[in-house]
Image 1 (cartoon, rainbow, N blue to C red):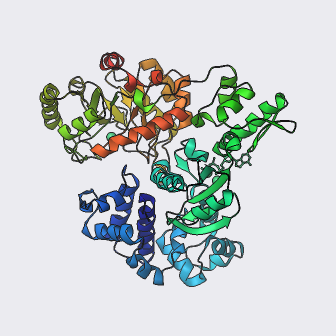
Image 2: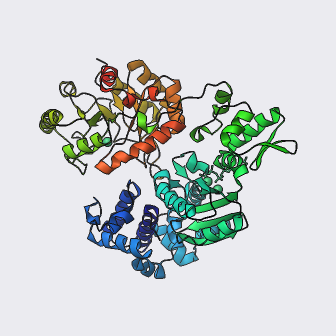
Length: 572
Ligand code: DGT
Ligand code: CA
Ligand code: CA
Ligand code: ZN
């Protein structure tokens, strides 16, 4: 049995929710939430650390008591302390906490007075009007809860791609050990590299489906077998994610891949094209009347209907089919195209590694350059660099640059203040090789004001990169209100660059926004915003997102050589 980060995250979150409903000490609760967030964003598996005997308290945000609990979860798959808590506060209440409009106090009240234990109970209490008997539950609150329930079912139980990756890897390697399986792959939104995935769609080639299903349901990460047939089965894993497995013969693998990779919209569009060729496509093959004319590979299927091969990331029916017909598909960016990272932090501010450690790690990735972008001092970051410390860092970089086989670029992450000015004077900005500018405060300005703020900032000739341009945190914070089209137009005109931030919880720009930027001629940069060396690995996820946004190497400035990059950064 292997315990993945997603399972640890779920367990700690549930614990925090239930303790909050119990009215436990807020500091303790915050510590659990914080730990869960840190683990959710990690690029390596905590269970590997435990196996290697590493000290979990080395992970920032994880103290001794939580480290012990995590170790228990990893080693036993259980947490006795959570069981204790659940004995008086039912686990389902944690789900109710996710609903907008319901905090711990209200959930506690609902449970105690109305014995509500599920969303169904809650809906009933609203429709019967029982809920209005409780203090503080008026029509307005009830309405908000109803909206919240809708929102919950949209977002609930989607997993960040980085959480899904190790879950898929272990499952695939298990299935590959099944002697009857000749090929196995994960399709669906996972193969399309969506930023979040709902469930996993596994496809295996084998002649004898039943023996593969029998083998599959022995998998030790399975919590519950939901259905089990001769060639398909659905299960829920301990990490909470649902898995659909289908077994097909080799001759239909391509058509099954195409079907289960989706998206649904892409499939529907492909079928229409097939009909124009008097062919019928389904998950078993391409048929001319009753005769199967293709199906073994996706490539052969696309060609049969007059299209060139379409990469999974593009399959959303957003113009890829027309482009494939006209031989106009983009040559998508790959991780190998990336020559450096232009957003990273050190232990001089809120990072966990030294400047030299970060630079060496970037060099070992084969990068030509790395920009160090520690925060400058401002209202939200009291430990940010002031003028003196920034100048010291610049000197340190000069010395290191003589020793290392990577060029460290001098930079800083600079706040865009409410009035659109930058939080460092131009006399200091001119000492830097580039600037990374971002909104870290006043998220709630009106759209007009927020847009104006960013445009004013871009007017500064030292402004290079707009970092995490929407400010959203997936499942946690909505994007701030901004007229993105206006921002992109301004960026294109001024030669400013927009960042695609590869932190798993940020991933802004979205795929659609990446494509919009490309179409508007705005240059992008894919950056990890790494706060420790292992986070450089997030680059892969940024590249996936960029591929979904049709980006080619030429759209992204950190595919350039250093000298070409320096030209782009020279606005002045
Ligand atoms: P997810 O799981 O919500 O992240 O998204 P997907 O795209 O993985 O969707 P899922 O798991 O419901 O189905 C997997 C694929 O199966 C989907 O991408 C396309 C195909 N599919 C599912 N339902 C339909 C359908 O009603 N019509 C067609 N043409 N294809 C479907
Ligand atoms: Ca799926
Ligand atoms: Ca599915
Ligand atoms: Zn940053």
